[in-house]
Structures are given as C-alpha cells and as structure tokens.
Amino acid sequence: MQQPVPPYSLSAEDGRTVVRLRGDWTIDRLTPGALALGDLPPPAQGVAAIHLGEVAALDAAGAWLVVRLALSWRAAGRATDLADATPEQLLLLERVAAAAPESLPAPRPRLYILDMLERMGETVVEGARHTLRQIGFFGLVLACAARTARSPRRLRLTSAVHHMEAVGINAVPIVGLLSFLIGMVMVFVSVQQLARFGAQIYTINMLEIAVYREMAPLLTAIIVAGRSGSAFTAQIGAMVVNEEVDAMRSMGLDPLEMLVLPRLLALLTMVPLLTFLADIVGIVGGGLMCWTFMDIAPAEFLERFRSLPWPWHFRVGLIKAPFYALVIGVIGCFEGFEVTGSSASVGERTTRSVVEAIFWIIVLNAFFAAFFSTLGY
Amino acid sequence: MQDAQPVIEVRGVTNAFGRQVVHQGLDLAVRPGEILGVIGGSGSGKSVLLHTIIGLRRPQAGTVRVFGQDAHAASEEDRRAIERRWGVLFQSGALFSSLTVAQNIQAPMREHLRLPQRLMDELAAIKIRMVGLPPEAGAKYPSELSGGMRKRAGLARALAMDPDILFLDEPTSGLDPIGAAAFDDLIKDLHEALRPTVFMVTHDLDSLHAICDRVAVLAGGRICAIGTLEEILAVNEPWIADYFAGPRGRAASACHGAGRRA
Image 1 (tube, each protein chain N blue to C red):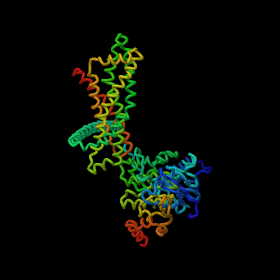
Image 2 (cartoon, rainbow over the protein chains, first blue to last red):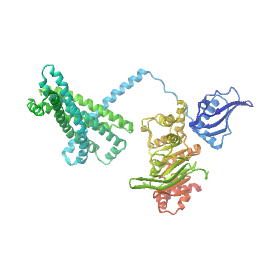
Image 3 (cartoon, rainbow over the protein chains, first blue to last red):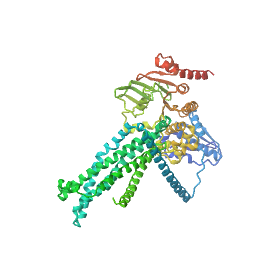
C-alpha cells in the first residue's frame, strides 16, 4: 500500500506557506507519512493554505487529518485556508470539522491506595448484598413451593419431566462411567495400603464407606452442578436478556413457578436416583477390581458385601443427595435471574453459578460429616 | 451515474430453507451512490437477501457481485478487501456488549488497519458526534444506552471504515416517530457528506418518502418492481397498491406530498 510519491509537500509561495496534498487520503491508505501531517509545526509567520487539488480520494479519516492540521495552525494564530477542494470535499471537511472532538479534560489521577480501598469495599458490600439476595431468593422459592404444594395442579409437569430427562437420563453415561472408575481406583489404592498391615480383607469395607458415603453423592452432585446448574443459569439468563422473563411477569405468570420449580423438582428426584446409580456402578467397578486383583470371585464378593454390618453408610449418602440438589437448583436459577442486559454477563453468571454450587456442596458435605459422626452414624 | 457499473449485482439468486423457497431467480442491481430502499411484507425475504449479499448466507443458486467481484467465490483475501469497504447496521445494533461504544467503533479499524491509538480515539469521537451521540457516550457500554442510542452507536460502527456501501437493516424500527425522523435526517446527512451507496431494508413508509432515491419491492421471491417512488406507485401490482394505499401509506404520502409542495 506504499504510495510512490510522498502524500504531501510543503513549500513557500509568495510569502505563503502552502501544503499540497496528493493521492488517496482514505482510512485504508493512510501511510505513516500521511499520519505525520498533523504534527507539522505551524509556519513561523504569514498565512498558510492547504491545497487539495491533487487529492484523488478523501474520506472522513483523511478529512480529519486535514482539519486537525488546519485547526492546530489556526490555534497558533496562522490563518489557514483550504483551497482547490471540490464541493463534495468541502462539505465533508465542514462536517468533520463540526464533529471535531473537543479536548476532553483528562480524568484526574487518583491515589492508587484509594482506588484499591474503594474496590475492596465494593467487593465486600456487593458480596454481602449478593448473599442477602440469594437468601431472599431461597425464601421466595420455598414460598412458591408451598403455594404449589397446596394446589398441585399449578405444577408444570411437562416441563419438569423434560428437565428430568435432561438432568437425569442424559447424565447416566457420564455418572456411570466416572463412578465405575472411582470404584476401581478405591479398591486399587486401598488394597495396596491395607496390605501393609495385612488387612486386605477390609478392602470391601473401605470400598463401601468410600463409595456409598462420600464418593457417589459428591461425584454426582459435582457432575450435575457442572452439567445442569450451568445450563439452568444460561437458559434463564438468556431469557432475561431476551426480556422473556419480563414478558412472563407482565402476563401475571410467576417465573419462579414456571422456570424454577420444574427444574428444582427435576433435580430433587434425579440427583438421588443418579446417586443410587453411582452407588451400584461404583461397587461393581470395585468388585471387578477385587476379582482381578485379589481373586475374590463375584459370588464371594457379594456374599461378603451382604454381610457388612453397618447399613448407615448407604443411607447417609442418599440423605445428602437431595440437599445437594437443592443447592445446585437454587444457585443455578438464582444466578440466571442475576443476569443483566449483556451477553457477557450470561457467561460470567454461568461460571459463578458452577463455582458457587460446588463450593457449597463441599461445605455442606463437611457439615454432614460432622453431623452424622456426632450422631454416631 | 446512471450508466455506471452497479456496485451490487444480484443475479438469479435462489434461496430456500428446506422446502420453503424464499427467493426464486432474484435479480437486483444497486447503482453507485444511491439510497435504495427494499420493501416487502414480513417473511418476503428482505433480511435473507441482505444476509446473502453480505455473505452470511450462501444462496442455492445464482451469483452476488459486489464491486464487480463475485462475493461468494472470491478468495479469502479478496473477501476481506470487500468486507473492509462495507459497513452493516444490524436491526438491533448488534454492538459487542463487552466493549465500550468507542471500542466498538475502533474494532474494525484495529482488525484491518494499523493506526496510532490517538488517531483512532479521535476518529471514534468524530463518528460519535457525527451520528448525534453525546461525546460521553464513547466510554459507555451498550447495555447502558437506550434503544435509539444503540442504533446510532451501531451506525457509528458501520461507518468506522468510511465504507463505500452502507447496509441498513430496518434502521428506524423500534424508534419513536420523532427519533425515526431524526434518524432519516441523519442518514440523509451522512449520505451527503460521506457519499456511500446505501442499501436499506425498511418497513418505514416515511423513510421511503424522505430519503430513498429508488425503491425495490420484494414479493413472490423476486424484485417485482424497482424505481423511484413515483414509478413504483404507478406499477399495477395488487400488493403495492395495498401497501401504499393502506391508512399509513396514505398518511405518509399526504404528509410528504404536502411537504414537497410547500
């Protein structure tokens, strides 16, 4: 795109300073030479003129460079004329000059430490507000659930079944596979450790505790939070951006009843079922490992598994599942409603929903561990 | 100018979605420097035509030539050169929501050219003033703007590269009558100063009267009439008669006819 001739020349004619422009002055042909036009120092004395007679093409960007030169020279007290411009070029120059940006006052620099303090304060206040809103949302959902429980016909059953398929059935392969692998790894790791004490025989007890009590519910909840919690946030968020939620409200439809309850119901039924599936598949995976590693045949494995004395590991795991479901559902939907106008905020909220859901699942898990061990289960 | 080679030349374009045929052998030529208004009923394929011309959709048959080059068969490099020479205003503005208005305007410059930041800032400020936005708007995000301001910002972005062709997809839809009239004036004004060819899809009868040099009527999968508004009104086609003889059509023509006489 280099032009063979310099885009302008500077000369003195009859005591006037004359700038002659030539060639294309359009935005995609501005060479570094052309860009330097604005930095020409104003002439020391006399009047000046800018000739556009040889300009082949001029657009708003080129016109701005010309106008900028003229303005800066006039500001320095040198009368500057634009000469030889066609009527169209003159019109363009006028329009551009009329739209010339005023030199905006530069924002006053602030102390870095003040900025930092302000940001910190904002984060804390916003965090607190966010938590309050979340608690408020949880309350609204409970109230809505209570209303629906009194008149069950209001429940959107079709929508709930649809979400059950998306949350539950479609998650079966991934939950199954991961749980199978976890069961295998549990046996693999515990055999090696327990063998040091000659206690391989307790591998099966170990497998039961690990899969039933911790791994199956936790793994399921984390997968569902990643798969479905994020999907809920994105779906509801996109609906907020599209003003679909406002439309619902304006028609007197309750978005909580239409959007949140079916999703919550789907989670509350499917997460325990998926946890149960993870229980079975995890034990099968562990059993397979016992067979190949410890020569415990499936029949013998089942026999021993059945004679395990403590039924509460299984129950504790399943008791936890609906609570995880509640956490995933409430956070996923809440973050969806927190979306504001832009599509960037949908992404932001989706990330936040998954991170928060997993965070609370693990906190809740710790709480349950303390609770059940205090009770002696 | 009448005999000049058309800037956009659509020949025999056929577009179909499954079994639903939208365009059937559509021909259209847009002359350099004119403002062409494209009208047609809902679902007649105005937006599909626009998408086909700007290359977002490949037609099942036919060619689209822009600046004399086949837009769909051009090499990657040629296509980019063509894309640099047009600007598109989408129906709802389609501003990038993660960028400020000024950054939105600078996005195509940044992508295609190497310009100093200071010049880009100044050019963005000029474009913002030219489309009638207050200077502070440059630092705002699209979500902080009203619908009308977003349209103006979208227009500023479409003008960023000083395009030779400006595509406008229903520029006045969703604006109040005063805002729509102001937007018409704005387009006319910018057209006078920057002289791009304007391809405008519209539903707005006032826009047709106020700013369009020629009008193309899209019906039955083809351009069934093209010409100045007077010529179109003389065409004996039931849809056109319905379109302009409806209460809104009569009001618009009465108002503009009176304005012209005065």
